[in-house]
Image (cartoon, rainbow, N blue to C red; front, side):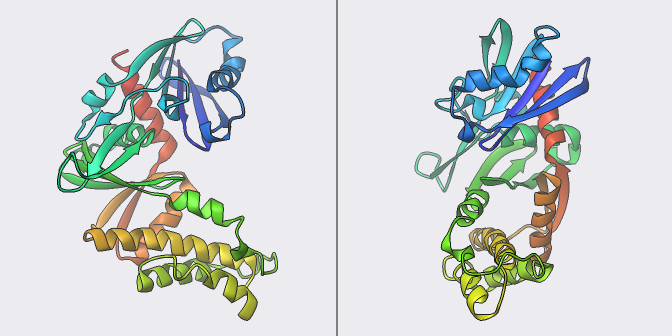
Length: 300
């Protein structure tokens, strides 16, 4: 078996024999490809295919996006794991069965037809995988946050995805790395301390939004002798804090959330949540994705 989570910035592949992961590979995300997605997938699994064709390939994420391998319609909220699996599309890729999982769509607002549209591809696999691994997430109302290029705040009701909201926090941070905000200071890591990230969080908590505070990253380099490294940490704290501040304005922040993601980014979000008085349970993103992909293949 080959399982894959294809995001905008990274492709993760797992080779699984009789339920045991025997190898992993990484490749370019859909947003970084110069050629066809099919060629990228073919190259990604080529070292394993030499030993024999896989019995089955199951992919989630941007593999089902428009202009990718094959567009798969979204499953509409509210949706549970069973409904999501039924929305998958089965194909054949180079003679091998290929299942591409559906993303999830919702409308945030008072009415389904006139609310603000939102979509996810890949995060739902991690969410349902997390519910499978951590049964408590399937009981009552739970808030699950998935940081990344496009951070997702998801509401679960008894294991069903009922609503979510997307923030471009990660993408905006990447774009700002090439902006004038970081052009003024010296490149030194000496003052890239926790106080820079905390200063960004504090500014977001006070001001409630990033637009009026972002230029401080540049001004502090020119007037206070801060380094570019300090500015990067300040911007990170400001953007993460603004994400939490916006959710706080939209609705009361919960006392506890689950954060699904890579260790470093999840820990950074946990620090932001702690600043806002919210406890965060950290769940491994790869483990949740793999569990969700295996869950999808159980009825294959």
